[in-house]
Length: 206
Length: 206
DNA sequence: GTCTATATGGGGATAGAC
DNA sequence: GTCTATCCCCATATAGAC
Image: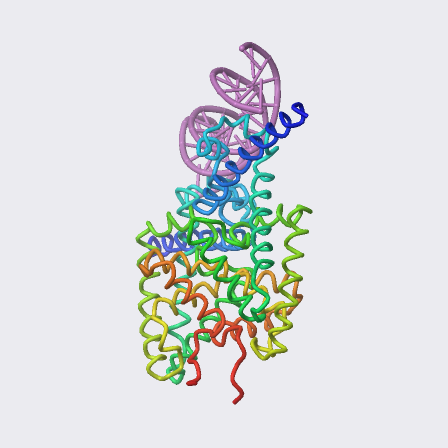
């Protein structure tokens, strides 16, 4: 028993360090993007040496994959935790706002739109694909339901809606609005929400 | 006189080669992004050696800056050439469609959203800034006019509309729609147009 | 498992011949 | 102005001591 707890403790600290590494990676990725961060950056940020980093993750790519896997897992968990009373449109809206707040708080953009390289190795990672597909299927069902309720544009195919929706979570407009527009985070979230669902065109008077 | 024509001819071939280099750079940038292309790639693509490349552009960054400068110039020219009969909303829509078609045809995305690095050195290039600002101011006036006509959402600030508009020209949804959605180019343009101006939400019956 | 020190390779940039 | 050949930095990844 004491042997087991010892092992478990060891595993626990290992897990904690791994979390710290992923946190640092996430933050750096959000700031500089894949190509500009170095393994030294990550090691320094987490207070570790580079070789120790490689004990946890066997390559830079795998490190990034795990960071993205964790992000998708968080999104899945967020969706799951939404109250049953929420309608399909409200679920989509809530998840979008969550993703935008994550980004504004220094987290990762949801979609690996940044680099063709990153997208290439992510879409070859079964661990990532599995989760991304799960999320995609969940949201596809939500979109179908929202259309049936007359809450989403029924003239748009589901995939057009979904890809546009994903794109909004990593929309560069967010950074420009913060940088040049000087809006606070919640105002940005509100505007992005508005643009995403109602578009730029004139809205009908209610 | 013959001396002058000789010089002029020399300049002309020089210019032609420069155009070829920029064409190749544009194509490669669109395919792989800044960080993944090498100066060897560009040199090979245009059938030149690397040192010759450096006779034309003194660094990789400057090469990319010039490619982007040319793109913005083309956008400015396109705007200028639009018939006077077009209203402000139609001008915005036409320019968006142009930008999307350029991208779908293997051209550059309009906004340097791809990489923090690229954005950094672009926004420090006076040549680029000058043109980007000019385009921005032109479009700002068009947006104001469109709002006055009741064609754009008057409840959105101009910069929110403009940054969202720019973002649509480099929207990753375009690539996903082509890759996974299997739509042809014109269908993608139409859908992007629709999403941009009318949003994802249900549209009112007319 | 953690470090110091190092191997390895790639790619931006240039020297120097023609 | 164009090439061949080269420099040299930097970042990924590892060897080997503790």
